[in-house]
Length: 76
Image (cartoon, rainbow, N blue to C red; front, side):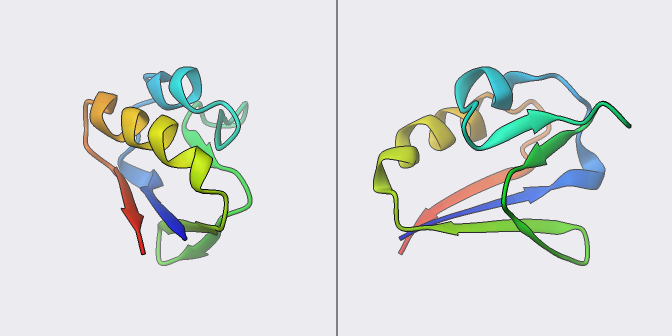
């Protein structure tokens, strides 16, 4: 299982996550920040748990490219 966490309030809207993992991220038209699709919010931390292991590489690339380091990816 892949677990992706986004600390959205610190997002600067650079769009790297959307470019590298478009199936998991999109930019909000409301505030220009990243949105982790199908995630649950817990105190500003948005978490997605997925059994689709094929998303691991693209999400890891998005995590590495993020200039403010607010994306975490774990394989459990």
